[in-house]
Image (cartoon, rainbow, N blue to C red; front, side, top):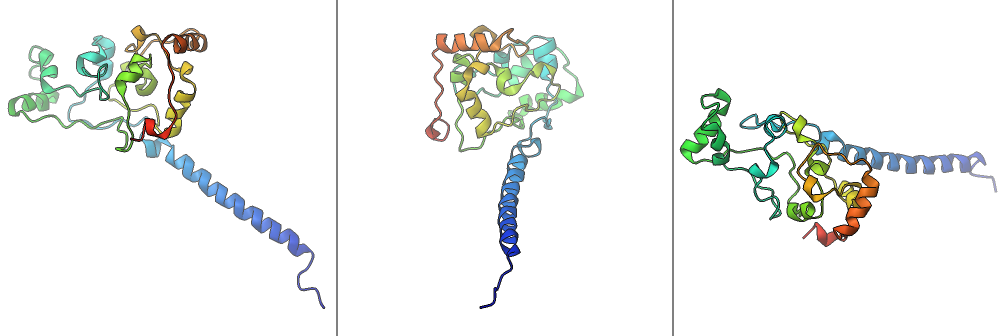
Length: 215
């Protein structure tokens, strides 16, 4: 019986199979890179707001503590968005006629809340608790970056599941003294040594099971 396929057919078939596998892997890699890229996660992109609030000015230059506006951050899952009255505590005395602050004054007059655009907006199927992270020595800057450099706020972290798990697997890379949690400019001289010490001292035992974040 005559030979149907030439000996070289084995080589061609192997090349096709390996090529197909590489193509599938390449598509998966490209999809992963796109999914975790700033284009998709919104990292490093400032968002338009009803009022151009500057963390650089208020937190950095004036030294206003994070907790003055985010009042519930130490006690609840949600950090809290300041009510209009918090803004007016100062701006009823200073910059009272500034055009850019008219939406704040209008909010006070009408009682209608300002509609801020959330910069760090997790999906509804993800549970995150600010208070427990703060209690364990995770600083604001670990997730939000150094906001004292931001006129308009942008995110510096992708907030993907992999990014969160990296910290849960190695909390020593981020744990800081509790008194430095709200200082976004603080940097440890030796984060590894200090982090490992504080992980033990603060009894940091981050969970990695699905129900921790997906409830």
